Image (cartoon, rainbow, N blue to C red; front, top):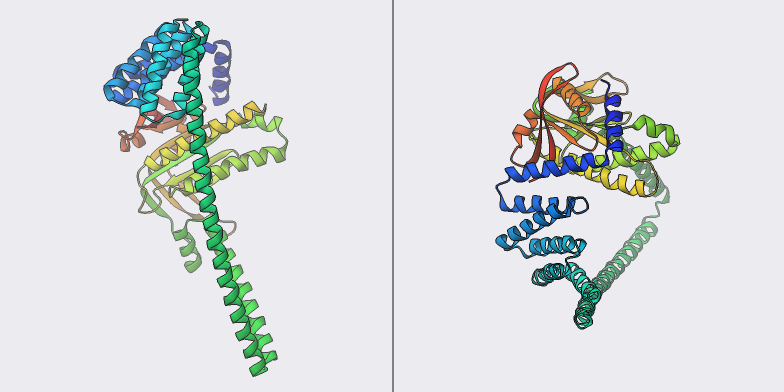
Length: 436
């Protein structure tokens, strides 16, 4: 079945059964909870379940919230205790169990004060004030109103103190800058005086003009050389660019420990039909530029872009030979696209959603041709990464079993089983759900 047909089928199912995806998410969280042994992970899963079930099953949400509170108390983590108590209070308030909600909000407030969570403490005081007022207990409501005012005043004081500190730092920086400027002016004045003295002493205006012209030409030549080198470095890795400059050709090399990532935007053709070409290109350039920035920070080489597809690889040097950095970059890319999509959706604009496939193995890298040359990689690892991307769901990161085995203890995984891919036998595939 073509990939696009699968995508539209899933889209239709999500439209017709809006609770289906949420139920699947809750089921996944409950399955993870059954397998979890670490107390922190169990707290996280119980807390997330209480938030996910809040609007569809408040009884179950209350149970998970209470379990998360018990775990937070056992961990002696006041921040988690404050969040869990708040979740319990929220469920109780929705169930109109106001006295119980007041107890939980009181716990959230106490834990927030001890852990210096001023924002959560302020929210707790607002809830206590609101619930006491709703029960006509105006004396307690007034007391909590006073606490709220006290917290607001303390927060205002902290903000004012921070502003004062920043102002002092700015003034100090301006003073230091002014001193540097004064020293520079004095230095330039002294240098100018020296040049004038030399000029009038030797009276060699013609020689000076010639020297100036030569210096300008040399500077232009140097600038052109620098721009050429910079352009070459934007196209090729530094080592390959140096070899091409010296030998005028590049020998193909095999790298045994390479991680290849394919990124492809979902529904690009549909969005291209909606947006004007210049707007579409600007949006694509914005996303790809962000990808360039993320891989640049993690010693990952951009190989090329083909339409709306983005291909990069790591391990093409003696460094960065594990898939960990590539998977972290993939998580950052999906996080960026999610936030960008939420922003554009709120503005009523179409946005990109991407599939990502990652595989680990050997590749051959080099430069082909003598004109309009480009650095590229070849091998079964590249083809497998492309197939993993095609078998991925939108917004997810599909990792092969080989790549996952290298870093299995560093990330959260969702096993998909063995899945068939085009021109490939069945492969083990995993969704990466986050960093441990």
